[in-house]
Length: 179
Image 1: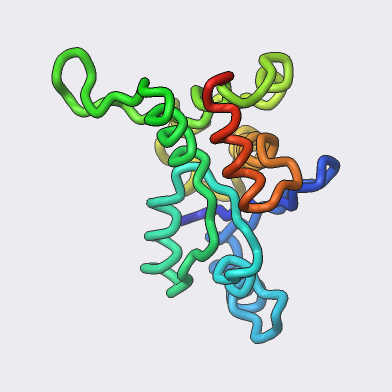
Image 2: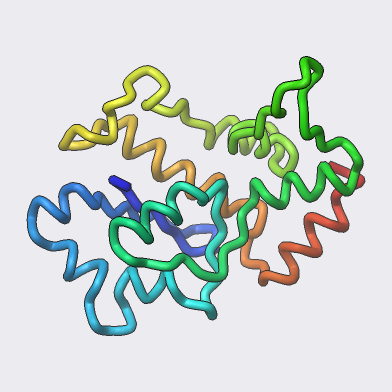
């Protein structure tokens, strides 16, 4: 895990990007991640009372645990919701036409179901690691890496838009037939 990006659900909020590699290098990781106050990143990520909205957080959750002993709590994974919608609409496929395990759509694809195309096109930034697998290892991070991390968190938060856990669930279930 090299970068953690978070934002609030407010429409005008900014993305906070924590460059874990740089924090480790500058011996500042403990100040940000493990501060004993209730304002540390660890406290936020482990909080049961603060809902975190993610997209396919499996590897991130695994890395947080194995690298920092942080147990991600109270997460809503939009990729899982999308699969739930597909199952509800009876369009979910376990296997593709060739009998191989079906492709799990990425955020860029899933965002088509819950964002207007004009909004989506403004937020979609090509993943810099498609062309350069080591982009997240180099410091300083490239402008493309910063932009990608910031836009990703904004793309994730838009469908929920200041809704509670129940309201997000209700939004996806009620709109499953219209998506």
